[in-house]
Image (cartoon, rainbow, N blue to C red; front, top):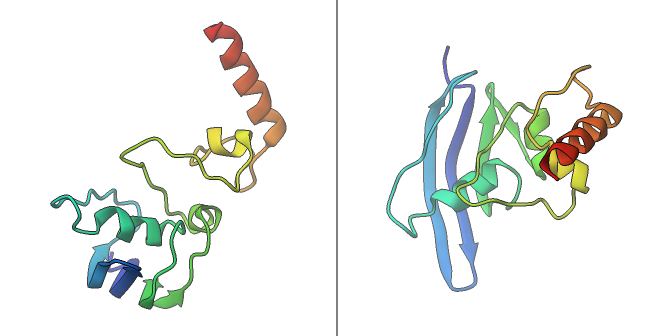
Length: 130
């Protein structure tokens, strides 16, 4: 299948620390699910937040199917087919409540999300939980 996504020499600096120092990850093929393991403070979350568009990298590039890409938001990541399960529950501040609830789900009428259907499903779920 080849390397569908590559992260090459990624650098992310914060005022007091360099969280990612020239990290390269290759070998992400289409349809694969990956886990990233390592010690606390190794930069795992920072690296994945860059891939998911929650943080901006300071240096180098992300390639998708051989083309350099910029991912500026989680929505852009999702549109590119990149999903992420966070270690801790997270909301995306720029998203509406409905968008946060359905984040990463695949509702009918793809490739577009049907917010009316999503709202009805959320309301039905809420009624069963009361």
